[in-house]
Amino acid sequence: MKIATFNINNVVGRLDNLIDWLAQEEPDVVCLQELKAEQGAFPAQPLEQMGYHAAWSGERTWNGVAILARGAEPVVTRTRLPGDTGDRQARYIEAAVGGVLIASLYLPNGNPAPGPKFDYKLAWFERFIEHAAELMASGAPVVLAGDYNVIPTDADIYPKHSYAGNALLRPESRAAFQRLLGQGWTDALRAMHPAGPLWTFWSYLRNRWETDHGMRLDHLLVSTSLVDDLVAAGVDRWVRGEENASDHAPTWIVLDR
Image (cartoon, rainbow, N blue to C red; front, side, top):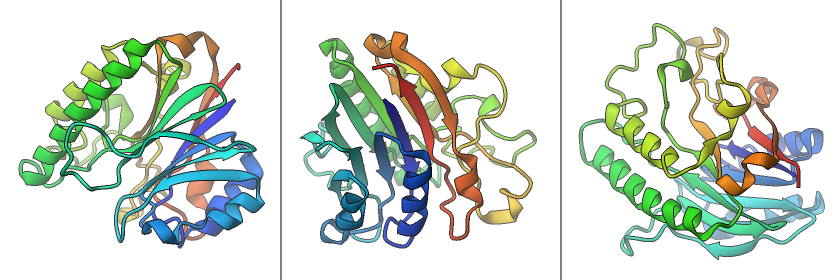
């Protein structure tokens, strides 16, 4: 079972990129972020023609998350992160596919930090940590996949970077990510590739793609009940080099189930 996460950065504007990648790599489940499309604008029909059924939570202009399943209907269990009924941003969706509970999440960027946006990032993160604890305690096989907007360690960003003070790597962000892992979740990419760069994002600015000045923002965390099933993980870097590409590359794991 191949599960991928991909911040598509506008699902309508980059539909051709998405279709090309799906056709070549054939993931079984795909978690999408930054749809940048309201609910009625999601391109479900062309994806269905490829055999992918979709569940999504859209939002005009920004955010938006989706789960695609090849040859199966995602059974939606949640379309909002619990803990704040007033938060209407479309950043979380959860569904069961093939006996695995899968979440697609788009954690807030948080810049500029400090400030209200960073406060929102940390508050959202706390709600997510609380919900993740409940999922772990359930004993169910769970994958938490998405754009976490967190660079977990200095090994996850290019050397001599200029991101000091950025919300992506501030101590509070990193500490929250470590507390999440402390519940028992496994960072699947690092588990399969303990050393070396694992970039999933390259900014459009300052030739970051051309110079391979990337960072790892996209993560797939697996519950303890799935660790023994984890057999492969990687990043489809080639997608970032295509015309009209997202600034993220698809990131994936393979479970032996």
